[in-house]
Figure 1 (cartoon, rainbow over the protein chains, first blue to last red):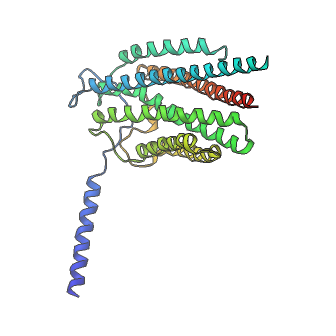
Figure 2: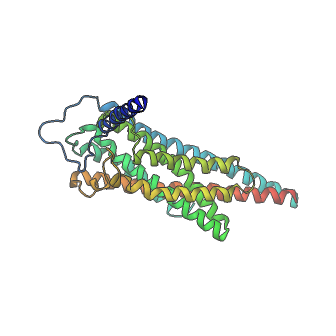
Figure 3: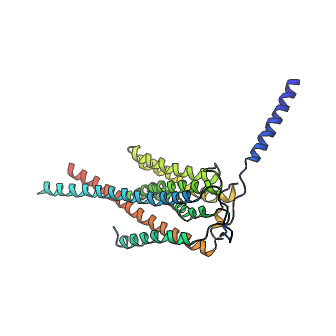
Amino acid sequence: MAALRAACVAALVIGGAAASSALAAQPPQPQDEFRPVGNSPAPEQIPAAPLLIGAYVVVLGGLFAYVVGLSRRLGAVRQDVERLESEIKRRGR
Amino acid sequence: MPKWFTPAAILCGLMFVISPVLIARAPDEASMGMVYKIYYYHMPSAWMFLLAPLVCGVSSAMFLVRGRPGDDRRAWAAAELTVLFGALTLITGPLWARRAWGTWWVWDARLTSSLVGWMIAWAYLILRRYGGPGSDKLAAGVALFGAVNVPFIFISVNYWRTIHPPTTVVPKLRVDMGVPLWFCVFAFLLLFMLLMTMRLRLEETRARLDDLYVALDE
């Protein structure tokens, strides 16, 4: 009986601790509006420039790499098509 | 390529040259500062990341119903663009979040469902590449799940608790912040159409190549 009571108390304590830590871990409220900066600039804890430049480099570089890769694939397949077409024509003669 | 392709490609290139100028002239955001400007490429990438699986899913459904190879090729092209724009979204998002939220990633509904959508597109491509005969229909089934996930990604920020900004931030943007955003959205939309056309042409040329190999063997 005492063991059961101790188990119940332990479960309550652990459950309460888990619930409180879960509540504490809840993310802050999202920003529901973007406002332009006023006269005073926003405080910068983490430098923004490397993140901003990195994001634009990733997007523009990624798109450029994809376009180049796609053009190369298309060019290679077209070359194969032309080669086979000329082969078929040659055999047909 | 169709006649409109070259003028559209030139226009798209010009828009991508002009867009950084417009973004640079837009004001910083009050609480996030300069890093907010990642939004001007992150959000259009994310919208293309939502558009591509819808195109893939609808084309796959049409392929399953009608069995036309053209629908299948369109679905394949759109799946590849889902992976491309998904990668851009999932990289630029954390770069923004690091400064805005103080963390690279949170396992909330928006980010997790986006990651799932991206992995579904990868599953489609892997199936097409290594699935062997019959993988086209199996992949089409996977694409339907990818398309069903899209509305969930979109509304997730409005219904579940998250620190990701909700969809309502877009209509509330002031003009000097909204104009560069919509300019970038149209640039990305035009780019999406151009890439779809190119990727579709690749599949059509591959189909022609297969036909030629068959003709050569006969």
